[in-house]
Image (cartoon, rainbow, N blue to C red; front, top):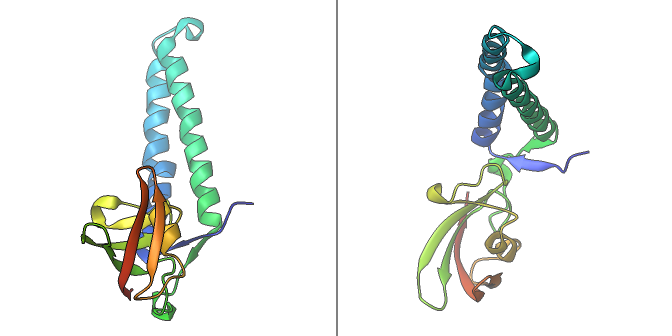
Length: 157
C-alpha cells in the first residue's frame, strides 16, 4: 500500500484535475495517434505505430500512479493545525543565522512542492530540520555544502 500523504485542498484538486485530463483528453489523443499510425500500412515495420503504443503504455502507467497517490491522499484541515511547532502545511519564516537572510516556506507534500512559490517538500533536508521545532528554536540542516543553522521566526498557516 502507498504511503499516506497530506495535501492542501488546492493540491488535492490539482491532482484530481490532472487525473481527469489524462483519462479523457490524454487517452483520446493517444488513441488518435495510434489510429493515424495504423492507417499508414504494415504494422510490423511501422515505427510510428510502435512509438504510439509505447506512449499509450507510459500514459496508462501515469494514470495508475496518480490513482495510487490519490487513494492514499489525505486532506489536512488547516484550521486545526497546531501553530506552536512546525508541521506539514505550516508556513514558516526562518532566518539563516550565518548571513541573516530571511525566507518563508510552506511545507507541503512532494507533489505540491514548488520552490518558486515558496513551497518545499516535507521530505526535503530543510523541512526535515524544521519539523517539530518552535518559534525561537534553531534548526541545524545538513545540506550538500555543509551545515546551515536557521532560526525559526514565525509559524503560521
